[in-house]
Amino acid sequence: MKLLLPFCIFFLSLSLKAQDQVIPTFLEKWENSKTYLLKIAQAMPLEQYDYKPTPRAMSFKEQLQHIQQNMDWLRSSYLQQSEQKVKKSSPENEKEQLIAELSNAFDALSIALGEIPTSELATKVDFFAGEKTKLQILNLLQDHVTHHRGQLIVYLNLNQITPPKYIGW
Image (tube, rainbow, N blue to C red; front, side, top):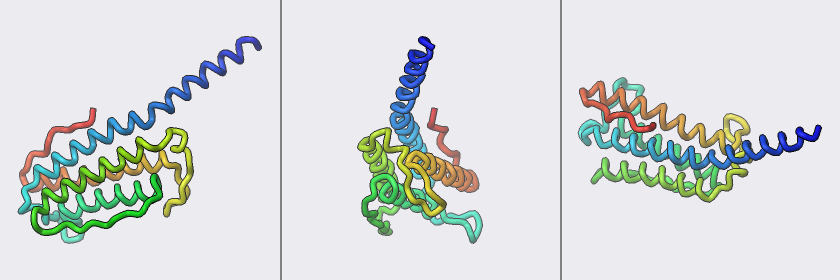
């Protein structure tokens, strides 16, 4: 019995240390995800931004806009509970503007996450697919970017463009 208390304290301290690594670990992966997606966006020539492999698919540009809008929506609605500003790209410098908006969306999430205490990640939010924790929202964010980035890689390959090397280790 005398050993049980120190044993429990030891494992509790390990658990707390692991929790303290959640946000830094996510942010490291998030930065890699940002770098990789922006390289993919740069690889497609502007003339091909309206390319879609099938009539029902989103175009390359629409995929990028969807990713950016989803990041802004999830951050503002579930992590910060702030108002989301909807942006429309102008035809001039459309590629550069869209890439900048994507970069800003990644950065805004990183900044917001830096302001959230790790303990708040367990907070539940009302999500359209059912109640989720803020940590689940973060996982959803990364999964969503990965899903659509994979589609963009296929778009590049279908246009005979070699995708950038994977960034994410």
